[in-house]
Figure 1 (tube, rainbow, N blue to C red):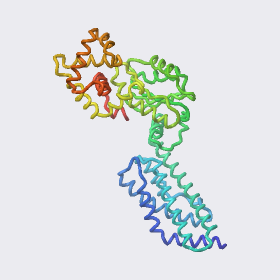
Figure 2 (figure 1 turned 180 degrees about the vertical axis):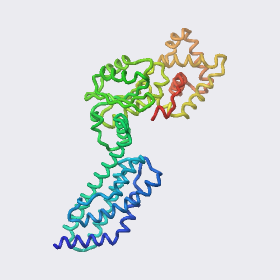
Figure 3 (figure 1 turned 60 degrees about the vertical axis):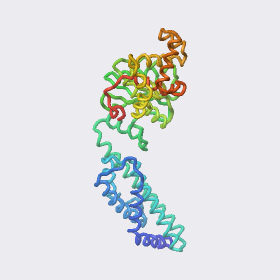
Figure 4 (figure 1 turned 90 degrees about the vertical axis):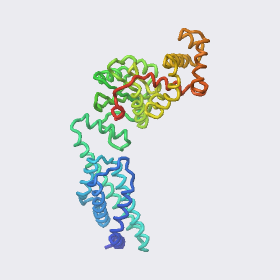
Length: 395
């Protein structure tokens, strides 16, 4: 046995002597790793402890091995990977936990090397090399088992693609080749509902000469992304959207954006715009046209407060506030020009001015201070109600 092998053997014995301590610290570190979707399943949580114990034993054995990577991955680790997939634990959370354990074990190796007071440089390098090879093998095996288990949960290709899209949206680092979409280019996200939605989306893709990724998320809803390497020209985009609009198809569009972050952002915008599209007479909206309304509709407190502060005080007249609301709408649609509003309403300029003064008296505020809030309140009041629940809109 060479001097390097002797030193490596001594370091391994030192690590074996601290095995319980190593396991306890790794378990504490693993449990401290944040998880965006924490799991309360007692079987999974108990499995974490058993997995850490098995991983520590396997890691120490591989440090001592002359042929690291030759021993099979422990069944406990493989079984826990399958359980994580079934329990909804994200793969990146699983990998981060293994990385936390790997880092901590490496710290123990370096610490014992320093305590040995020997020329442990070559032996330390060999141990760390063995550890790195073991970590790579474990993560590869666990990730592959996780992916296989996830795929078993989806009987059809469409279900599998929908799952992959949702995981990419959630930020998981997964293989996207099957999606056949260029995530580095420009994207325009759309959400379409209705029986004719698939045909309308295909027509839109052809009109814009773009590739399209589309998934069926249930209840007649389609999530789609149009892809283009050069982006989308605004006028052409608006023309195409108007052309494919149909009475029985509800369309909501995000804004063009590039890269994977833009792909996600445009989809979030489309989901927000869908809240307005369901209530809009035109049945198709772009986020840039309804951004403020879309955000307002997600805030019940804001919707209720705007109505209470700015519309209810106008309801005390004999027209129940209808004339006041009509006057305000014409005023705002005319860029707050009294003469233009009077022309729209077919009344005199003096009449419009008088109505606006009355409105200010009832509100107790000058319109110049709150016109933006009142305009949003009016638009919200004009939107028709929808039978679609928030969960159906946002799933």
